Image (cartoon, rainbow, N blue to C red; front, side, top):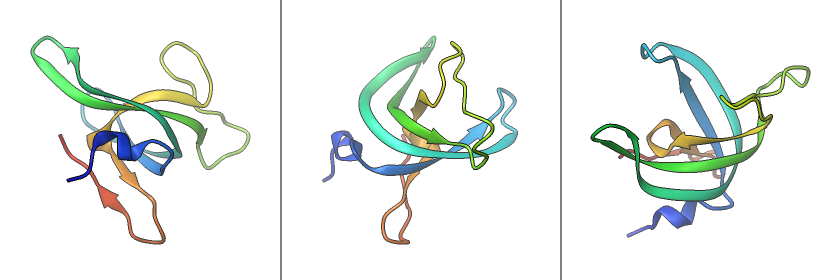
Length: 93
């Protein structure tokens, strides 16, 4: 059985959604850290991954997280896929 920590160092694609659940697009980056069962809303816990070196697909437009930091952020593991030798692997909570 693989561990959540197996994600550290992996290159991932993150699928982005609005609060209403509308697909916004994707970004890619490298997992630098993980956190298990983080309460993201009252009564709702998710596994999270801290992704760095985020690429948006447009070198002129950096990714900015909710605090204004560029090219790094926490994302739900369920919204990620690992990019490995043309064999994406999805994760869900």
